[in-house]
Length: 442
Image (cartoon, rainbow, N blue to C red; front, side, top):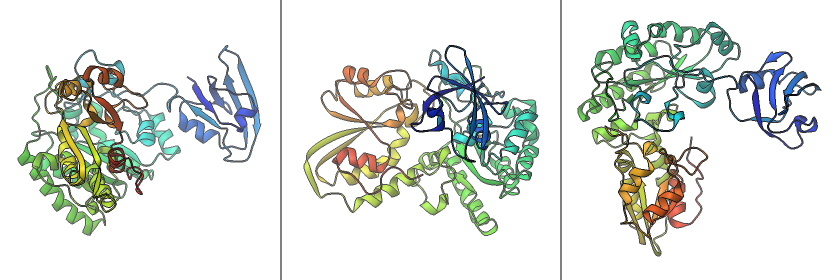
């Protein structure tokens, strides 16, 4: 257990003391440092005794006098130094359990770590928290957290999560609220399991904890084609998507009058499944469920609308093809139709079917290099093809199946260009001009 240092900032206290990247942080004032939160909390004091482990195994004890809140100047390779707290559930809809075999090992890791919930907005279930975890998150006041609820009925939640500890969700949420820790929640809607009256009861239970519970995001269950030996599960149909939208609208109207917020928000995918246009920006309030992908389509559309007045009437002859998933088509088609009104510009959508995962997987972030290559074939050899950056692993030019961009280029013969998924990034890539809006709003 030690935090491996990735960077020491120039001119910092750490740099002056000879700490370098590759060293490991062991403790501060005799307190073990398990994660970035411990480091940030304990490093605030004006007097520190810091233990650093050098690559040769030697330990340095450094005594530091500094101003309170003055930073040491350390960055770390990971936010968790000990070990990621794994998920101990076997959720009937878990997407990790639906992955095909022989994919990258890290894809099979089930993260249920409260630290990643606070730092990165990951949704957790609260079922694996030990008492010392509760004490730490309360002492450090880690707020807001992001919690997967799915349902509040005690026995049903046990069944859905296949964990006998899952029935304590109401008490767990109440404990967080009593400690002043606010929570954004999500419900993965599984037809026949937690929809209908069960869903409405869950929403009402969560609303009773407002403002401790800040919001509820409704997300349709994602089903791949690899569900052998898993419980029977139906996909969300168009009629069910329509009923979810209608119920959410009614709930929002009540909650706006009662709580001053819409409180419950349906995912973009429900609107795509129902063939409905996305609601206006005020539906999403402050986009508090954006980490759940709720409102991304509206942000993209509104950002593009803000750029529209600056679009040229004509450009030098230019052609581009844009890779998209099946879900992305609903977002992009109106935008592409408008761009094709620019004289000299031709933009074509290449819709890629997800064969690798199969089932009803339609989002761009789960497209693989092989599926993209299958869609391209040799038809686009020598043509400009734009690839949304969301299909790449963070920080790498590698797709989900470990196919590299260079391999995709050489195999297809296409001129592959990675572009931002924001409206501004797309327009800039197509027209070669900067925009006033910058990157996607958050």
